[in-house]
Image (tube, rainbow, N blue to C red; front, side, top):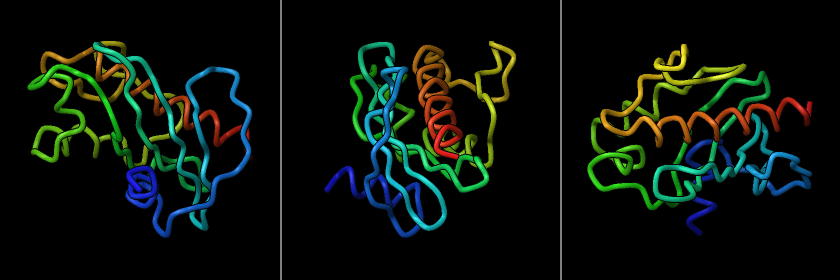
Length: 138
């Protein structure tokens, strides 16, 4: 149920699981819906794997992200998944992005969470894996 909620959070109307072969080891599952795809990815964060769902529309733009599970440090990396202002603002930055995303420290356009650059980079890695997966699906 948690996974289905995450799919619906990033892909309006939800989607059905489809077959996808991933050569990066980051993509777990892909769901296809009317407006695009929801891609479950598992990048490595500061304290372990960050399981997240990334919604990508049919034009290859990020619809949204939802962090399903993580073991990041409370008050730092864990903010990425929080419903508080910092977490919501961090996740909302990704909406509308396409191509390759990275944190500003790496020359990108995503403002990292304060004190949690590694977690922020992990989220970017996950978003990039999702965007690449959708690009391969055409």
